[in-house]
Image 1: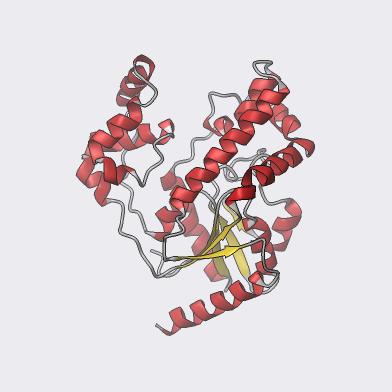
Image 2: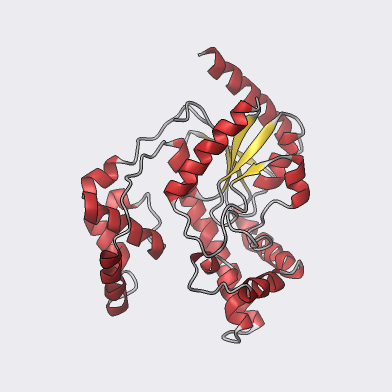
Length: 312
């Protein structure tokens, strides 16, 4: 589907949104969001969603896509991204994928072809019972036993919701067909990776979280609760939303809430760095904190990349 794509990727807090806004001032781009939490309406502060002012400068697709009670699958994202990509090209603009959700990013860049397997509620119920009656790692161990340890390294083994879906597909079509639907790595795309120093990340991310709390993150979750959204909705399991919910229901205090948000954020960044490896030669890594002319350099790289692809 995608002959050539341009993506700006990186861990939480690496400045992807701000970088893309600055880039839009130099070349005519639209953004395809690849953050799995920014798709939800009403969830703005805790997802670091581009502000209305930022979105007035450059159009963002797949932002505020669904209500928080809607389950949004990887297939939904791929289909929406394809439609967004075509819409942007029709306007003679440059589509740029921006986000930190590795599953979304590589599904597009490596052209994953996902099987159209309908939900199997009976099998899901079976797995839910197994989860309750076994150790926490039951699902990940089952998944590894199905596809093998080496293949499992490319999946998030801590996300039970996705593991249930993967096992559901495997139960229907078998592990060989499941793995066959993941295409091999492609190197025809331009991938820009933004990152920052690991040694300062805890201080940097703690400061970021405190700023979000000061901006009204707790009020945002309170408003979601008033609209009827709760922890039974997948969107509310997101980092910070779950912890603030528990704080508002008096299950934890403010200090514990903040501590858990920071811990989960650091764990997320660790996972993101496994999705986006420094050893991956396809990624053009830059330290977004070191040079003021990085945007100009990337602009020139994009122009050159597009010229080369148009001539092929």
